[in-house]
Length: 242
Ligand code: UDP
Ligand code: MN
Image (tube, rainbow, N blue to C red; front, side, top):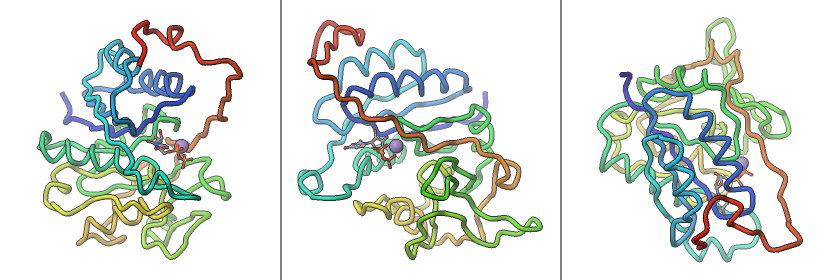
């Protein structure tokens, strides 16, 4: 069997949660030796999510990591999924010794070929993400086999202007960096995390997906649903409601 792939997925309770996780789980069920870390932004785990995870037959952990109150109360952009991802990193530090991890939001779309690509990661790898920012694409730019910069609709002074779905990291590399973590800073989560992996420079990035010429991950976003009647969670496969 290949080395494990740890997929760190933040999620939170909403009408779209079960359909998003259904779609994502059916992608991961096509991938070898995946260990899915599903971390809910909630005080207690949602039973419907546990049931879904059990049915997949995947190796999984169902953890919780609520967003701290001070960020929840904040007006404007919130650091979404940050406490979840840091909880995932904590789990990896405590339990993993090898393989690769990847931050995969529950609402994105992943080509199964992506997972064979990220398995190649020795330290930190990067690759294009489609449907990302106003440019419709976020990607390292490779010219004549050489890295020349980043294409992203929101550079914002970032050293690593990339999307959360656009990089993967080796577990051994993370374990050598005990202070690496993701900051609670909306818009700067990726950059903050990648900078916390210092010493690590852009020139050391491993480029995947045929030198960043193929899109294998898309930053899809699901339209918010506002059911006019109360949502009957029994229909979501669980009679014992949370
Ligand atoms: N998320 C979360 N708590 C929240 C909002 C979002 O845990 O209050 C999760 C969400 O399930 C997703 C990730 O954080 O996996 C990023 O959120 P979202 O997809 O809403 O961000 P966007 O794609 O719009 O940047
Ligand atoms: Mn999203």
